[in-house]
Image (tube, rainbow, N blue to C red; front, top):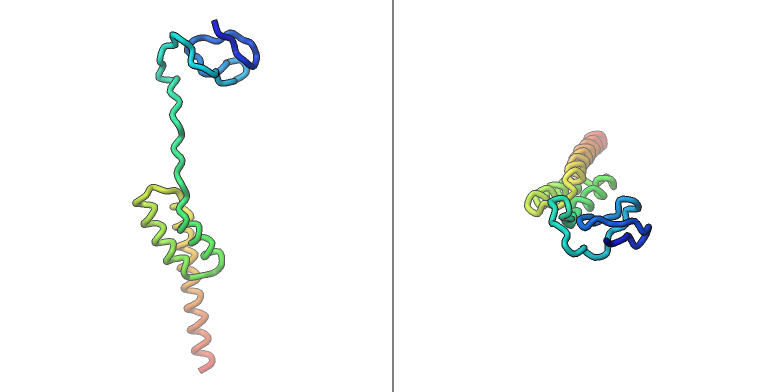
Amino acid sequence: MATCANCGRELQPMWKYCITCGTRTSVPLAGALPSPLSADPEPEVRRVNVLAVLALILGCLLSPLAALFGHIAVSQIKVTGERGIVAAWIAVTLGYIWLVTLAVLVIAFVTTNA
């Protein structure tokens, strides 16, 4: 019977980890039965959409362009399945807030100085 390289405890043939110390067994043991729990799939790593991050940064910098970049990021995320949908929608909201604020300030400036 095989033993754990870390703690020395005997290992069962189907174990991928030592139940005492948690160390991964180095070599699959001969005669080990396949188990549905033994499959260790690699986690899928999804990237964050760069345009969503850029739009969020623009939204924090008080730029109305955040709405434009946020909408583009949302459409890209729907196609590619990347992460960042929440950041993109926050950027869209901030972009429209800054656009309305800028419009109100320009209208107030034009009407009071005319």
